Length: 115
Image (cartoon, rainbow, N blue to C red; front, side):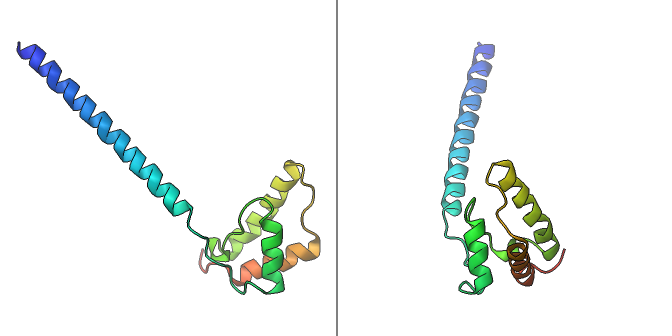
């Protein structure tokens, strides 16, 4: 009889832990979805020509990230990577040399300070 009681206790514990796990995962998923649906922070100088160019070009694939998402060094690595991604997906060259320079200068000017 003791063995049956031990098995029943283990089953109840396992069911309880499974329920807690799925409720926790549901709560986490809802929380992540709710925070992900928040409006993005507006970019600095939103009506300036560099900001408008940045939003126009980068919004083609994804919402334009706030410049403080990366440091100046980070942006210097991100821009070429995004250009390669665009070319790899068949979008061709998205930025002229002048546009790349304007966008990069804008992002560096407003980038996160530090490393």
